[in-house]
Image (cartoon, rainbow, N blue to C red; front, side):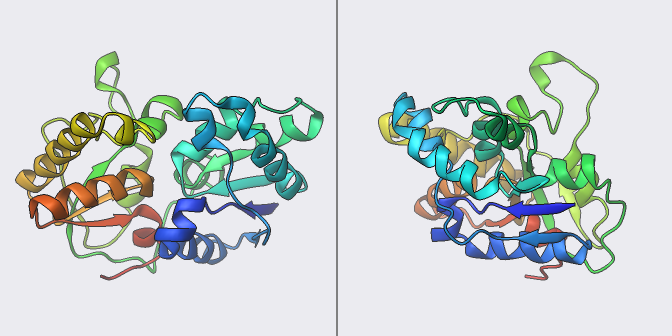
Length: 247
């Protein structure tokens, strides 16, 4: 199986350590991974803003970069959601359909495709709270949703539970939105900031040293809220923990 690794533009710019950890982790698991060097953005920011036609060039480039791979893996739930569910600014050719059907967020790829049952190199002696982004939770369904009253499940917790030394706490409102929402955090700054602060305080009051997530975009928002308010909590992408980050 040949894997194409997509590192979202905001991770490349602000959190390259999450992209590096994803590549190293996949290689530790024996996967044949390539990183196309001319990749840019998947088009999600334009699509989220209602400017769907403006995403066409980014989507077309994405397909040219990744159509040759068996699977496309990325450390971002929101980008995966865009490619799989909203990638429609371009003609739906066989290549486009192949890309959409074979794009996976890292957690679901490890859990559902590779079915990883151990991370023998990973140890994280810290207390963490898990943040499920709205994209991973309500679009990719990597965890149960409280509003459905369904039987609880969590793919990221299944994976993190295989890491030595890690301890978990649960905030009072574990699947509430943090307020990022892409351009929502710009157009509704006051509401977004309060939601982000409520989220980091909820985790901190539960006893978390770190907030861990599969989406750096949400953590970027929460980190800004925490730093402005002086909430002493740290942030880390799930790929870094599974790859063996000690911190």
